[in-house]
Length: 202
Image 1 (cartoon, rainbow, N blue to C red):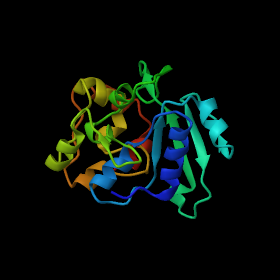
Image 2 (tube, rainbow, N blue to C red):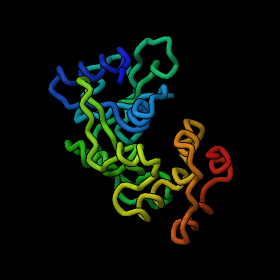
Image 3 (cartoon, rainbow, N blue to C red):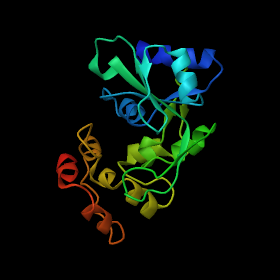
Image 4 (cartoon, rainbow, N blue to C red):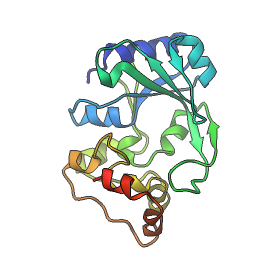
């Protein structure tokens, strides 16, 4: 798997400063599927203010621990890379955003908060894959499986049941599988989502 130089540079700088750093989520999944990622995400043990100390050309405008690092790349997918502190999300009252965010130093705890096993995979600069929830196995089998308790995972990421909220990518089409239907327990949550988001998910 080829990691772009922009991502390698970010990971290397974080590691040189004494922090853990990994490419995570959909970009790793897409690499395993031999597809070009539409965007890249990095997870690190560094806190947001520590990330900004390392990358002066960056911005932090949210409460979720995500810092936008500008790379100067001509590739739109790499021009700004989201670098997020390892975190453990709390309750999702609105079914879309965590009520609170707790930063952690544990990569596996960060991966455990993700929606599906195939999105809970990390990759370091040396090409080592960290896959505590057997996401690679599910990728090969064409399975979309929630991390941890299925109902909790699907309720937490309702649009994810359709593939992925917004227009970033459609997971179902990439796996060439029929989209999973919401269960009776998760169906009420779908009714609370804006129609625009549901339409964009398909």
